[in-house]
Length: 612
Image 1 (spheres, rainbow, N blue to C red):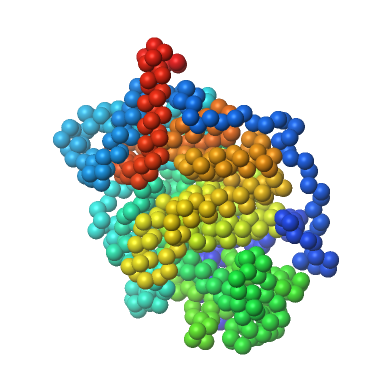
Image 2 (cartoon, rainbow, N blue to C red):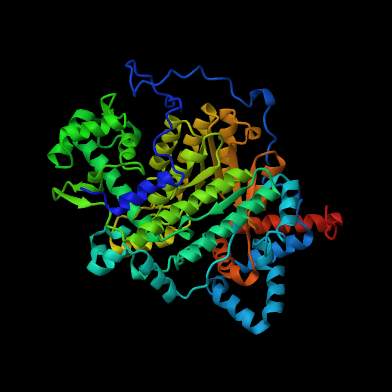
C-alpha cells in the first residue's frame, strides 16, 4: 500500500533539517533513582557515577531576595514611571473600563486623532507594557534593564485586527482539508480536533497570548521574516537573550490539528494495551508492554503480522529488552517512519481500523513542508546568533503537534546547548506526564532539555469549548490544583538539574509563592544561580517587585519585551488590562508597593531625582 501524501510530508521533516533517526552517538543515561538492569541490551544503561557534592556549595549561598524591599525593586524606575504604574494598575481594576477596553481604545483614536492618541498611549498603557515601536526604539530599555541584571525575551506583539466574523471564517477554512470540505470528512475527527464556528475566534477568553490566523502562505512568510528580525535584534542587544515564536504563525493550522489527533490516538492506544497487560494506573514511564504480547495483539487486530511487527522492533532497535515503553512506541510514528500501516489505528471498542490522517492535496502537502521549512530557518538563525528560541504553547487541540515538532527541533539543535525551548502548560491535567516523558527522551538521546513552565493562557476558553462541544475538560479543576501541578513539574525538573548539566527551565510566573518555592528548592538542591540553569520570567510592566530583586541578586531573570507600532499593538494592550483585572490580589500588592516607594521617595526628598 502506498503511503498517503500526509506521511510523505511528515517524513519530509527529515530532509528539512529534522533528524532521520535518534542520534546514535549519544550515550545512554540511567534515569534518576533507577536500579540499572543486569542484562545487556537496550534496557541496560550505564551505572551513574556517585552523586557529586552540591555544585553551589563551594561558592556560598546566593544573596537573599526580599520582594518587599521597594527601594531595590524599583531602583531602575523614575518617579514618573512609578506614578504611571500606579495610574495604569488602578485603571485596570475598573471592571467596565477593562471589559470594553478594546472598543474604548478604538474610540479614543477616532476622537483624539492619531497623533494625540499615540502621545496619550505612550504616557500610559503603551508606555507601561510595550518597550517601543521598533528594534531601535527598544534598545534603551533593554540596556537599562541589563544594568540591573534583567535580560529580555523579545516578542513582536503586532496582530491583525480582524473582526470576529473574519476570524471565524479564516479559522474554519484553514482548519479543514480540501478532502474534508468535499466529503464532510471532518465529522470523522474527534470533537476536540475539529474546527467549530462558535470557537473560530481563538482570541475569546484569552488574556495573555497573541493569536495568529492563517490567511495564506505569503502571510506566513511575513511572520517568519518578523521572527527572524526579532532573533537578529535579540542577538544584537545581548549575549544571552531569548526570542519567542508561535507555530500557528508559520503555517496552516489544519496540520497541527490533524497531527495532534494522530499523536493523541497513538498514545491512547498504548495506554489501552498497557491496561490489557494489567498496568493501568501506573506512572506513564513505568508502563512497559511485553513485546511478545504486543506483537500478538497487533496481529489479532490486523495491524501487522507477528513477522511484520518483529521487523518494526528490530529495525528500530526496540524490544531488545523484551519490553516496549511509551518512548519506544512513540518512535514508531515519528517523522522517519516508513510504515504505511501506522497511518491506521484500531478502535478497540469497534474493532475497526481508523485512518490517522486524511489524504492531502498536492498544495496541502507543499504547505506542510513549507511550515517545517520555516521552523528550520528560524532554528538555524537562532543558533547562528546565539539566541534561545522560545516556542510558545497554544490551545490543547494544537499543543500535542506543537510540542512534538518542537522536540524534533530540540533533537537537532540542542546537541551542544539548549537553543530551543519548549513550553509546558501546567493547567493541563497531563502536564506532569508530558514533562516526564520529554525529559526522559532528552536523557536517553543525550541532548539539552529546555522548557518554559507556565500555568496557561487559555483556561476560560478551553473550559467553555470542552463543555459546549462535549469532550473531557483537559484543564485542572481549580487554580490551586494548577499551582500544585506547576510545583510538581518544577520540582521534577529541579531534581534533574541537580544531577544533569543538560537541563534548563524558565519559571515563567508572576506568582510570588511559586518564585519563593523555586528559590527554596534551588537552595536545598545546591543549584547556584551562576550555573544559569534556572531562569525566571515576567511580562514587561508587571511584577517588577519580583523581577528586579532577582536580577540584582544574580539570578537569571528576563522580561518578556513586547514591541510594535502603537496602533498595531492595541489588542495586546487590551489583554494586559484584562490580565491585571483577573489577578486582583497580585495587582493590589503591586499598587501597595508602588505607593510605598512613592511615599518613601517623597519623605526622603528624592521624588524628583532619577536615582534615589
